[in-house]
Amino acid sequence: MTSASAALPTIVVVLSRPQEHALRRLEKLFRVVTIGRPDASLVDAAVRPAVRGVASFAGFSAAFVDGLPRLEIIALFGVGYDMTAAAEAAMRNVVVTNTPDVLTEEVADTAIGLLINTVRELPRAEAWLRAGRWVRDGMYPLTPMTLRGRSIGIHGLGRIGLAIARRLEAFGLPIAYHNRRPVTGVGYRYYPTLKELAAAVDTLISVVPGGPATEMVVDADVLAALGPNGVLINIGRGRTVDEAALVEALANGTIAAAGLDVFADEPNVPQALLDAPNATLLPHVGSASEHTRRAMADLVVDNLAEWFSTGRPLTPVPETRLAARPAPSTGG
Ligand code: NAP
Ligand code: 8YV
Image 1 (cartoon, protein in one colour):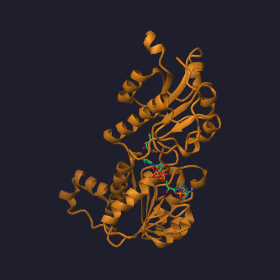
Image 2: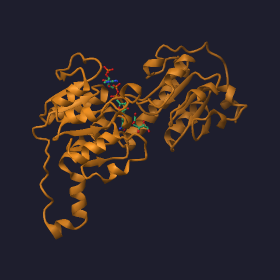
Image 3: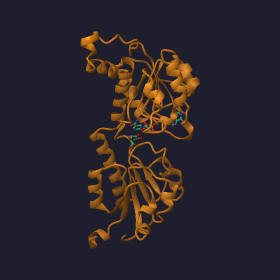
Image 4: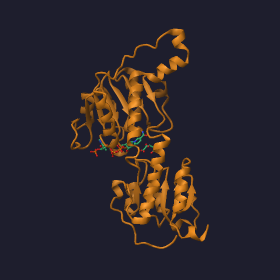
């Protein structure tokens, strides 16, 4: 360590996968210690008391916060922070930031692709071509489902839900939604319960945050309400859907098809879903372009930079919006 870098605030970078560009930026601004998972004991005991910030590409627990006594901020990679201890961090006056907005359009694009693939069976049609069946067996069969005439229900009309809705407006499809509260200034019909929304539409797109309030709320009742022409798209969090009920609904025709980007126990996908011909499955790639992942990583760095230069993080999560920066201290 040079004497110049010793004067910079110490931050820990928790990486689950390489983010070279963000790491290089962080190294210019901070004295960086890198660990592979959010476990404070992986930080040298002599360094732990000096750590003031964390850039986490892999979440964090309350024990992790407890293990870093001088911690001020954890900058998370990703907008969803359901698998983190944000509330516990807030109680310890530690700011938590996430990466909203910069991924909204990418995730909405992915949702539309997943919807079309699910309804028009495009991955299966391509597999037909690649397997030589176009030559051998002729045209791929006409798809029983179409987007034409469908009505859309958005479960979670937030940043991404709205971006999906705007795209589907251009497709000429009617849109309704369910949130805990109606959104002001939108013309889409609001349903106060998810079951009422599911009963009113035939295409349900779930994009709510994970957590206890949304755990398995897309259950057997909601799927039955969606009906035999029903399509479920989930691009929010896997645990929002009761996967066992979904498997049964796909097998017995309670709904027609599902398109899933997220699963309850990633990266493990239930065999019954892998075997279901009417399920279209993606490995959580909603935001996964180089462009958008770079923007997310930049926002992680920008949040830390702002905190340590102005005391005002750019995108704190609501739980920690009021956390305050301690009086400036010098060094370490
Ligand atoms: P957001 O702007 O906060 O929108 C979330 C929406 O969900 C809000 O409209 C909120 O409205 C609603 N909501 C929250 N809790 C609810 C509940 N219990 N019941 C019904 N509605 C509820 O968040 P966002 O930026 O759109 O992101 C949404 C989620 O998408 C993230 O949290 C993340 O889990 C997921 N995501 C997935 C990917 C991917 O790669 N697949 C990528 C990015 C994000 P009310 O508060 O009025 O209820
Ligand atoms: C990321 C996401 O895949 O932002 C989110 O909530 O689910 C995705 O953009 C993830 O957070 C980072 O691995």
